[in-house]
Length: 281
Length: 272
Image (cartoon, rainbow over all chains, first blue to last red; front, top):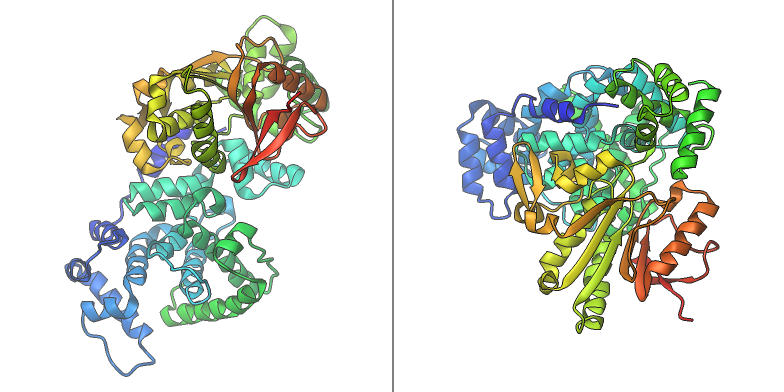
């Protein structure tokens, strides 16, 4: 139905992320990451330094101590949050565009991305697994594939996808796979590779709908972050959203229905805070 | 697509490949035939079907059957069967056949080759001694175009991202422009052949492992019975049949018994 070669070409033709973003993300994704290297790299980028200090002081607003340098900011926020912040700064222009083929008006993809990243951050306190630093970035970028996929979804193809969903009760991802032999998660993984992001970020994005295949906790956590983000957004719009998660993910993350119920309002409240604070999402 | 055209296509596909397309699957036929019509510069599905009806020797019929086959596949698909192979089944077969040093595998409906190549990588990685054995690995596929791709062993970035760990990608593939090609020494160990599961099979027994995953789901019960009966004659006693997660021999052919290995269900011939 669509030319996969052209699709891959277009994913690889997206403008690259800033070089400093790629280097910082790569550094933090490395298990032997040194704090000094991260702070040095951020220090070279004035705009990024300002963003980081603003975010760190915002995160530390309950405390009277003002954070005045990059090193303290990185320690305060943690490398995982720093990676997400850096990638968010680089990817925001892309994620703010509209993708009408997925029913996303301008700004909505960005909102959903931020909601997922906030959910991933909140989940840390509720899941009995260590959250790898790549999780927040994978959560933030999980739907980035829709940007390029949308360009290939003609009204004719959208109609076939809708019919496949109706007739065979398929999800969006299954219908895309059946009819197009590719889904937006896979395309997102390709974009993340093109942006030279760490492999676990790529995996988290590819398998955000199908974590069983991903075989990595980042995939489980990105899957959950996406589901939670949908729940948060539905709640804010007064819509219902069933947060049932796969048995495998629930087992691997040791999540019970009670934990999920407790997690939802905390994540929603944190997301509302972020929206208010930055007045940007 | 009107009902008459849909019935014509589904009837033909059923006759030729036993693929069952229930009413409601018009969307699937339309999606596949639109692509074919475009490839053949025919403008529309209506024109394609009118050419199908008017001339049985224009080669289009075969292309329609090919277009209607589903070629969804990935490296190390569902991972657990490969874990079971690595941890239990291959060690058992290696021990059992250590004398004659020969093993025979068949992968039916091999699509673009990811499954047989996954098995070959698993062998190279964990049972390198088998590379010195007489391993006959036949992989078959109905669709000629797909088979040609499998033989080439070249995959795009999307395909290598599906289930293939980066460590195996760099070890067993060579980058060729924007594609990745499986290493020649692994590629030539798989004998790819064209085979229609509902026609005659040119396969030689005895087979130690048969991979026939996510294929039976497309067939009706009678066709499944015929295929399983053929497998019964090919599978070595003590050998293993691997079906897809949603497939079974239960209530279709009671010559097989289910055996769970690690997290995967395999089927073996009942001992007579």
